[in-house]
Amino acid sequence: MKKAAAEAALDYVEKGGVIGIGTGSTANHFIDLLAGIKGQIDGTVASSIASAERLQSHGIRVMDLNEAGQLALYVDGADESNHSLHLIKGGGGALTREKIVAGASEKFICIADESKLVDVMGKFPLPVEVIPMARELVARELTRLGGKSVLREGYVTDNGNIILDVHGLEITDAIALESRLNHIPGVVTNGLFAIRPADVLILGTPTGAKTVTA
Ligand code: 5RP
Image (cartoon, rainbow, N blue to C red; front, side):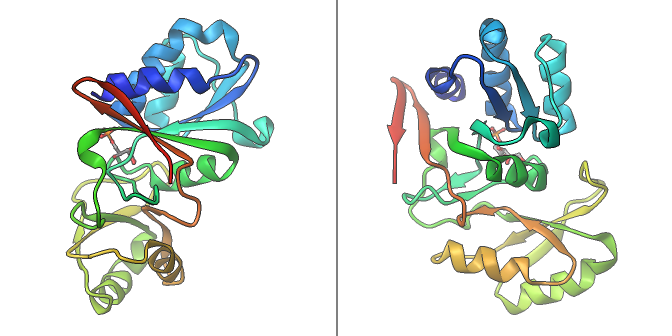
C-alpha cells in the first residue's frame, strides 16, 4: 500500500525540477521509484542523512537546500493525517529537516497507507525534538498540556538533539497546539504539520491509490 501511494506521487514530478524528499519507509519507496526517472529531474534535497544516502546510492543528485532555493515539490510520508491534511510526523525522527524542506516547497504531497488517515490525531505519540539540556523543562510543560513524555531511548537526531514522544494527546486544534509547543524554550520542532499542512494526501489501499484533498 505504501508503494502504491509512492507510485501515484510520481505523477506530480515535473521535468527539470528539484524535489524535496522525505524520510521513512514510504519515502524510501518513492526514492527507489524516482531512480527510474532520475534523468528527468535536476536533483533533490533530502530531509535526513538516511534519505540522502539512499538517493546517492541510486545515483540521484542531492543538493543543499540553500543552493536549491524554492522547491516545486516535497514528497514525504506521515504517521497520522486528519481530514484537513494536518499531519503528525517524526516517527523516524527527521521532523525538523522535514519541516524545513516542506516549508521551502510549493506543493507538499503526503504519501501513506490508508491506516494513517484518522478523525482525531494523537493516538500516535507526538514527536518533539528538544535541545538536550531542556529535556526536563520541556517534559514538565508537556505534562501541563496533558501529555505524557517518553524519551526516545538511545536516539540522537541528525541535528544532535533528543526526541520526546508525547502520549495521550487528543489533538482537536492542531494549528494552535503546533504553535503553542513551538514556544516552549528548548523545543526545536514538534511533529505537527498543521500550520503548513500537506496539499495532497495519497493513500495506498489494497485496490490502489486514492487521492484526498482538504
Ligand atoms: C519520519 C517521518 C515519516 O514520514 C513517518 O514516520 C512515516 O514513516 P513510514 O513511511 O515509515 O510509515 O515523519 O520522520
